[in-house]
Image (cartoon, rainbow, N blue to C red; front, top):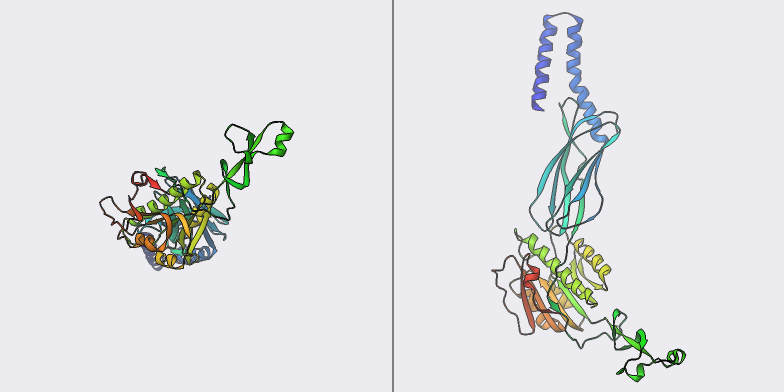
Length: 395
């Protein structure tokens, strides 16, 4: 663009000498045209600047890890003048990381038209992927002037975590919810308040389970199977406080969230209703979500991913345990990146649970995590190695 300006300046000087040396009308007209062209290009570009609008068009607001998703940058020119060249500098980053990637897009924009450029992105880690334009410059048809337009265009995509198969077991618990509202659809139990199903009598069935009225009609013994209560209180607490803001932050947070989803998925597959707890920066406090099945788990994970603020602010876990209502649960598991042991120590006296687990996510397997007490089982998990680190976990 500088070369174009220098060229025009040289042409204007030449036309001026040509007009001085020659008295022809053509020399005057040529000089006027050369002087008017830059003025005309400036006015056209200025009009186009205020007639432009831009946006990111997303096919979906969520995406899976390591899968490409399509994004469109749409530039709309509402004036009658064409934009010979538009230049967009785009940045994107995961809020869990300080690493920013960038690329440029060049395109012309026709008058009274929308120019769409499609590109694909992907993320190796879960979290919120922030997409923004640092600037959008437009040029006049002769590339003499450049003006910025359409500031602060941004979009946000939630990159959803997956889950890993873990080696865990469900403990036989004495803790139950007296006001149980949920029962298994696949397994019978001993809760007489709900009937799971009816079947023919087999030797060994209790006589008090015979459905006498239906048996008299069928002329054979019909037995009632009672339902299995699912409300066995379990809690998974995700400590989302950032204890180490470094190049390891992204893989550590990714591992923490996928550990949470893996544990919750395991409990869901085994029909164990439970709660997940995390700090929501949007709501400014800790949030408890009851997981009843795969649908509620997916919704909760989406809400978890969307709850982060760009500065990774999270409340202190001590605040939750101080405000938490006292009550016994079958198991309480905290997932944290605090390998000093302070966060895990909160389970010692702050939780009334038959089973207490502290899963501590570390940047590498070389970091040692201190033991807390005999009542709290500390399980170190190296970033990116969930299945290999969690063995024989009891929930």
